[in-house]
Each structure stands twice: as structure tokens, then as C-alpha cells.
Length: 345
Image (cartoon, rainbow, N blue to C red; front, side):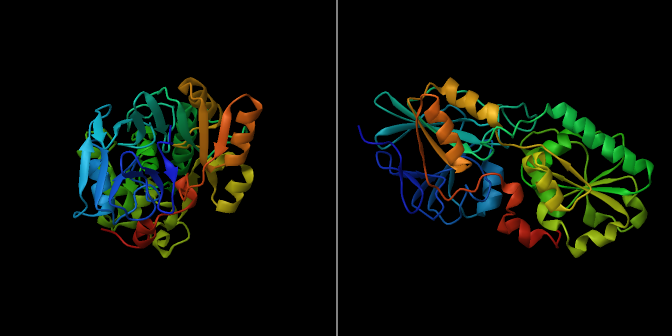
């Protein structure tokens, strides 16, 4: 039987369904796992995504983008295959793509994590014959601590800064990571401000029914005394910009899975680094692969070769799969965020 997905110059293509999954070039029909820039390329004629992710995706692709929404687990016939979208636990509206033809099942995980996240639905384990998995943090060194402990340390850092009368500036990716960070902050410590790029995404999350602490757009506050004791959430691209000068004395922090490594923390040149990721760590990756029951595993974007080697040594049929997807976005700011880093809405 022919492969249900093949790698092409434009992206992963399903010949039997005549559509692409997360294409990196504009195409006629695209099925989208989530709204991060490396997975949702503008310019395609037609998109298919989850209902939960519609608002964010429309904001990212533009008002004229033709987007069809699908409820989680709702089947849709496309050509000779049946497609359904299932929670990936990555960000609001993120999905795994399940493709079935005459009993053969392929699953594209997209970006995913299995840890609980109050800002999106939890990852749904799926069984399949072929699994295409990301491998952003596919090395044994990447093992996340319980997120409750991470949030305790973030809040303790904020409290210490508030006691010293200075602001806490924390850098986090504006879509997904910032909202997950917000969900773990303790608002009793002080006011929470957000850069415009973050606040725009907060509004989309709230419109989708996600409960977040009260936040204030930084552009609405002119009184410099307001920053003392506050925490400000800004996109990663704001680090080092002139925009930071308005806040006076402050302590800086960065939130990313890469903060697990001391060298990455040092290169970021911030006072504190907190390892919190919306991607699976090493144990999560192996658990998802094992529980899928897949006969074949294709590994893409991230530490591909180490994961493939480990799988082969442990009895799996595994191969690398080339894509243009980048994985963890905290290290690679999207063009939208770069353009917004110095400005405000």
C-alpha cells in the first residue's frame, strides 16, 4: 500500500486526500496542527483546523484566509481518506492529525506535550500504524520537573523582586507559553502587565473561554511608579530592545525548555532561567511512541538522529523525516513578533 503522506518541496502531502499537513509553502489545501508560524504558513487557498484554534489561526493568517473548522475527533472525508483532529496539548486549539484509509492509520503529532495545561485540552493518546513525531527535546537530558515546582520558583523570584521594589521582566513566547505562564502566576504578589504582542493573544484565549488572571497592557500605563513590584510578560524578541528602558530597575528571566541547559541560560544573558516547555521531554516522547503501537516511526524537527538511533536500538522501525518545521519557537521569534517587539497595538 502506498504511503499516506510523502515529503515534498512544499510540505507533507497526502496524495489520496489531496492535501498538505502544515505546509511551509502556500498550497491549495492545508490541514493545520496549530497556529505557530512554522506550522501555519499564510497564502494557501483553504485551511482546515480545530474549532478551538480558529480565532488564533485567523489572527495569524489574516481575515481573508479561508479556514474550515472541525471539532476534535469529528471525522471528515477528504478524497480517499478520513481525517480527524485530536488534542495535542501544545497550545490552545493544537491538534494531532489522524489519517485513515481502509484500516491503515497514520498520525502526525505536530508539536505536543502530555503534561497538564489549563489553557488547552490535554494530549489524547492515539493508536496508529505509522507515527510522525516531533523531537524538539529528543535527548535524555531534557526532563521537565513538575510544573507546580517551576511556578513556585517563578512566583518566589517575582515576590523577592517585589519586596526589593523593582519590576520583574519575564520573556516568554507570546502565543501559548505566555498564557500558560499567566495561568501559574500568583496575582496576590502584584499587578501583571503584558506587552502588546502578548496581550493580543491573551484576548484571543479569553474569547475562547480560557480563564486567565487580570492583565494590563503596558501601553496604558504612563506612571513609572507602577512597575515597582509588578511582573511584565514580554515576547522573546523584546529582549535587549529600547522598549525595556521605560521600566527602570528590573530583574529579567526567560521561560523556555532550553533553560534546562546552563549554557543556554548563560547565552540568554538574563538573571533567571526557568525550564518550562510546551513540547514533550525525553520520557514523554518515548511514552507517546510506545503507547501509539506504531509499526513505523518517522522522526522530524529537533534531535532527529538521536531519537531514531535510540528507537532502532530498541526494536522500532524508525527513520528521519525531513521537514522545514523548526520546533520549539522560543529560540526563533516569528516575523510577526519581531515586527511587534518595539510597538504596541
